[in-house]
Length: 310
Ligand code: CP
Image 1 (cartoon, rainbow, N blue to C red):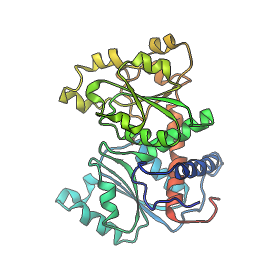
Image 2: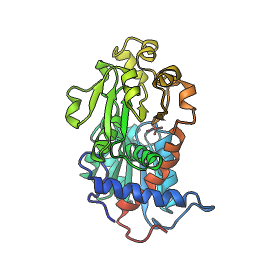
Image 3: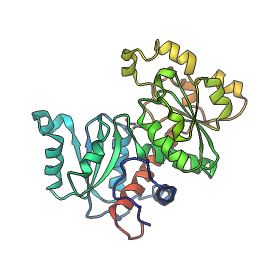
Image 4: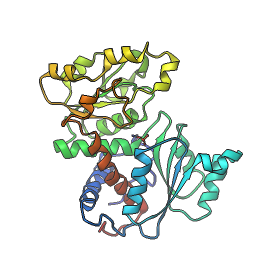
């Protein structure tokens, strides 16, 4: 089933039907990834450019693997070895790459809005792999896929997102996607890291980690962006851990099993303790595994290829 949009710029405005189509297609790809030869010819002849202007481990490798598993031709661009270093503009960079006949672009950039800007420069389908503090839609989709696989549903699930909500593109996309899919969302973090009037997105807010843990089925713990530390938005990493850290004693006090998620990379001992990150109720590595299948689904559905996935 084709999607209602040509690009994936974010989850704002993406319908429940489109999110469900991506998650259902990803289930098929997840099964294919378990085969002895986890590869299908679905995107043979299509060319994907991975345009990463910011560091990435999980997203970049996950997209590259997804493209290889689909038999697409893929090309990787990194700023440090490109003509951006010689002052070439973003518009010239993308138009020159597009002139080599490409079908899709996966882009990560430090500035919000770059994926949308690229849609105005070239005809290729654009996939946002994280733009500034705006959105990271494939992360939210893989988070929702992981929850759907574990709980069998998203509707009514209680998901608490913990940490730096203001600067988190993961939170931005998760809030939009989860609310669209009927989950209940609670945001928890310091007042200085909470956007004003965020409740208008249909979420609740608390500044009490114990309340969030008591309420939630799932904690999605965000990375404390250490660079924010210099901006004085919280007193110290030690104090952040004391006030908002997800620790074993705090989880034990809740007397119930809670599913732990984290998009990575983790600051162990800051937002999340190691014994919690590595516990059997943590699905952090499942998120990473599922990310390949979800990205295969996004690439396939945006490619316009209507053949069966194989
Ligand atoms: N979750 C995530 O975006 O991780 P990377 O920055 O390593 O891609």
